[in-house]
Structures are given as structure tokens and as C-alpha cells.
Image (cartoon, rainbow, N blue to C red; front, side):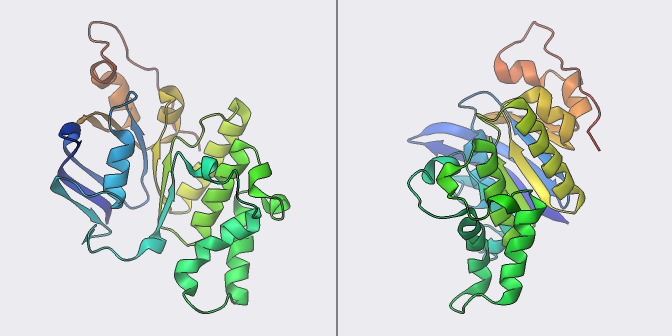
Length: 250
């Protein structure tokens, strides 16, 4: 099953093209890395794929439904670039943030014991159970990112989308973060990740999507390393910009 199907997607801001004629699919259980230089349209494309923005032309389907008709929002877990900025003045705890993931399921009823168990399980799965009662604005960048992933897990999301989640995170925390993503992916969660560190992302993902307004590569990390997509994306034509790509970590 394809979780995402995009065909001929184009989008512009004030008549300035940002994404041009992009077609791609994301299969169930796939781990996709979305890369490109600053201003290449990565974040805009991710929002289009999630139905957070509508394309000027082309179509996007989520779990087989057009994004304009898709209503199962709890199946999506989205951590934006601004997530960690929004919590600076929020006097709420980590557990309260993660509990928000249950709201689409709860509706107007009160939380049940089952909901609380799901929240505690999500906290435990991402390794932050010991931080559950700490204020979110007192966490490190890596801890905050784990909190928002736990919120997505509490919502029982099938698709996890992350926009540069390791910016400002030290190397050790980044490695542990990718270990977590690999574990979640092995458990069946589909992941689409925007990352600025190309060498790191190609170690972990199944598929690399490289764009600079238009789609330059959609395939395996090995095929990407042997292609000229990196040079085309970053304007490095005429240089040897191929990457040495190691096998994805287990």
C-alpha cells in the first residue's frame, strides 16, 4: 500500500515557483529522507504531501484518499521545525504534551485508563518516562524532539513526518535519535524525514528524495551516491560530489 501518492505537484508563493511538477510515492513501512539546499522547497513539499497545503496543480493522496478529503488526522504525526520554539512559554509538562496525542481519539469524552496507558507507553518507548513531570520548556532540543515523537505515538500515528529534527542537537544525541527512528520504522511506522546532514541521512533511510524545486532523485541511497543529483541540487556540476554511503544501520 502507498501511504503517499503525489503526481505532478506544483506550488508557488506569490507566483514564485517553489515546487515544480513533483511526482513520487511513499510505501507503507518505508523510511524516506528528503534533502535539498536551503530554499529548495523541502518543507513546502512535505506540507503538500501531508495535506497541510494544497498544490496549485497536481494531486496528492494520503492512505489512498485525496488530501482534501482525508479525515483521519490521528494517523499522521508531524513534528515541524517550529515545534521546539512554540513551547518556550508553555507551562505544561512532558506528559501533558504527549497526552495531546490522544485528543483526536477522545473527542468530548474524558480520558480512560486505556488512554493513560497508551501515553505512558509512548513516553517509555522514546526513553523519556523519567522526564514525564518536567516542564517542556526546560528540556534540551533532543528531549523535546522525543517528546513530540511520543505525542505522535500516543496518537497511534501510522506516518511520522519530521522537519529537520536534529538541528541544534549534539552528535551523541543525534545518533540516539536515529536509533529511535530506526526502531520505530522496524515496528512498521512509515517515516518521512527532512535532514540537513546528507551523510547521516543516507546511512539510515531506505529511500532518498532529493529536490531543488523539481525532483532530482527518488531512489536508494546507493543509487543517489552514484548519481549527479547532489551536484545538480547544490550547483556543483563539474566536481566529484558523490557520497560514500554506508549500509543502513540495523
